[in-house]
Length: 94
Image 1 (cartoon, rainbow, N blue to C red):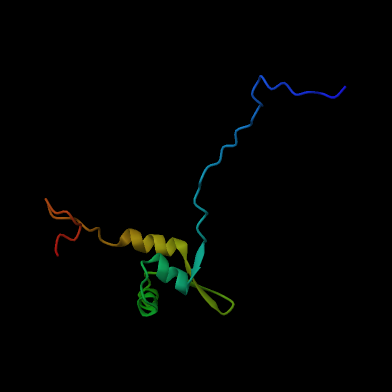
Image 2 (spheres, rainbow, N blue to C red):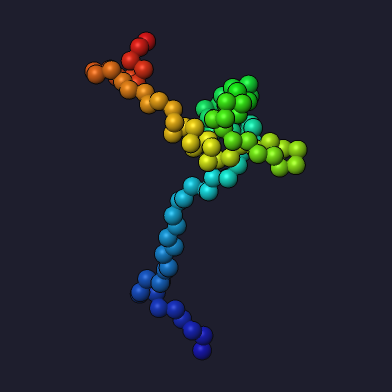
């Protein structure tokens, strides 16, 4: 005699919990990636920041990479924008 499933009780289901996490940031960026991380600055500006010692560049073979730590440090050292009292935008002007 074949087994007949009991249809009066709901089937057991398992719950799968997932967390949406950002992928880890790389330890170093290509020149193009560093420009993007810094708000899409130009390569000349990037090279100027390297020459001033404000960004750390390392070589991997023939590739020049910018360390993520130096990008974070540079962004942390920049002045903060303060909006005017009553202003709707951070810049305050039109």
